[in-house]
Image 1 (cartoon, rainbow, N blue to C red):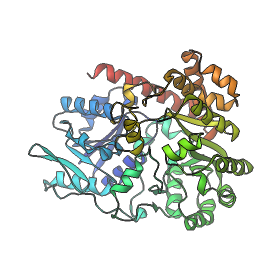
Image 2: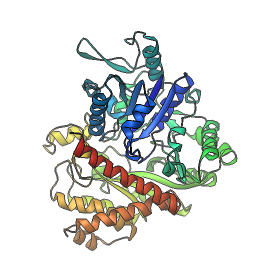
Image 3: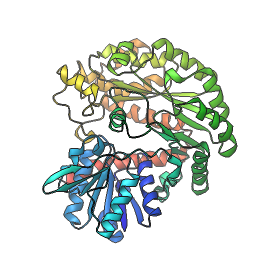
Image 4: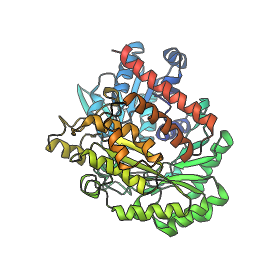
Length: 480
């Protein structure tokens, strides 16, 4: 059978789709991927490929796009089956009630997708396939989850060939990899806690590939494309000391590519950073989220102090490891001075590369429930990014226009280590057009520096990302 994946933009490759493609190919099927924003004749190419089924991975906040795309595909190609999976379908199974959607896949989808493909090809009964959603007699049926696959090395290598035909991805000097699955933490704003609860009693949730397998995947990509830096995109890169020892003993000799990874403040010690630095560690992403301990710990469910994060930053600076912080503003109970304190803490930490996000209330999570209980949110639905500007607060806050300006200025002001008086002055000035320009420039420079991206490949991917933004605006004007 022919299976076609469609992704909206090239912001980043979906490693999940690459795994699904790999298992489908291993089962004897043919796969293809179209990045919609980079295809001038998308629907003609779909017709030429003649897929038996189209698959989406529906990202949270992009559900409106995939809803519109699904409807447009059914209008143009009524005979094609449409299968949707990904975080949003897993989080909100009622999404499968859309009449354009034939099947849904929830949770980890490799085995379920292969079994569904076999059933469709041979006309078998699908009702016993775990992890799928289907409709029967006018009702939506959500099958139970299967046990987690605890042997990740048994999966084939993810099929990156899907993306390599796109020059901006192939020539990008940093590539993403995932060394394991699962996050042990319970942040109130993150859907992974709900996924962990769904899989309770169904196997070990925190799992890792062997380091040998990780190196094999990296070296394959080095043979097929440009790889000067590796980003390990696991929620948390290190979850046990035994794996760190294996990594230290194997990675430098088998791969040895400089890398960045995500860690949390409470697991960072000088010994850990020393070992990782000797393996090639160049950058660490940390979810700081808020500069106010009360908000970080009580509202967001983080468990570290400002004193601890300052200590961690000193260790990272000592080993010349770049720090990249994830920050969140427009939170329940937050004032604009609290949000500014988040920027100030980054400056005290000596962080120059920052990412600031407006809090997005995902349905069914404690942060969202908190906002609803405090009458700070009209309802607890997951908001689509297509319905708002990225800088616009969703949870009700005082002085929302100042939050918008702080969001736009955050990476720039962190880079120049702005003083508190300058910060407070700028967030009061209605210069959003200038601030948006500063935001884009700072974003590009931050990505280039942190990921050690070459100027040419950085500009190429940046322009394709901008093309994706224009494409999405066009979609929402035309597909009404």
